[in-house]
Length: 227
Image (cartoon, rainbow, N blue to C red; front, side, top):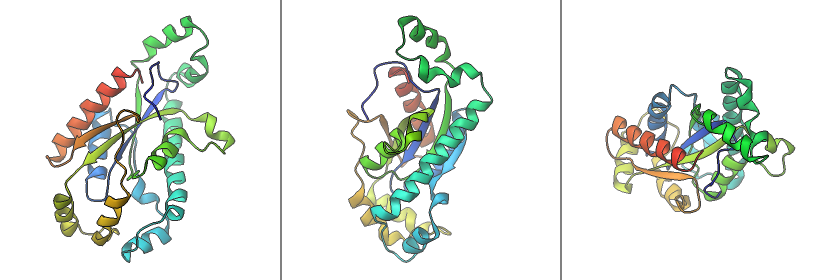
């Protein structure tokens, strides 16, 4: 997904807080959702199948065949939350996608609405670029993919391996087996900031500091790129 040069085609911005297990994406995501006006928050961990959870609990890394159905559920949840968010706002917002590019006057009519940014926040590992493209673009083989209501920005929470290991040793009550960290780090394809709609936050400050940094960077990115 290339950085866009024009006004957003969609009325909702989905912010996906991404990274490997232990980076704090769920906690940061909740804080970020609050900073973005108490935006709806989705924790992708809750959308894993029972089989995926069983595999991770037993220390077995997930394969693409395990992840793709899960990613589809994540994308559907983001789309559902975006649609519900729009239900409580002016109907003109829901038609923005059809207005874009039709004329210069149409584009200028959106400039006023650009201030009405609506957000959905999701915490999801989104380790590979192909996963991120799927989450942001939809399924090209699905006829309903053209009905997307949101643009997507990724906030990559970057944490050193030693700190990740420390956190995972201390974490209780989560199905992820810390032995899988190496597998996730090997799978991780960090966002290419020249080609993807993404920002990077250093994840070793306090929760409030990291969320505040993510908030500032996301807002600056959205404004700069007219999303």
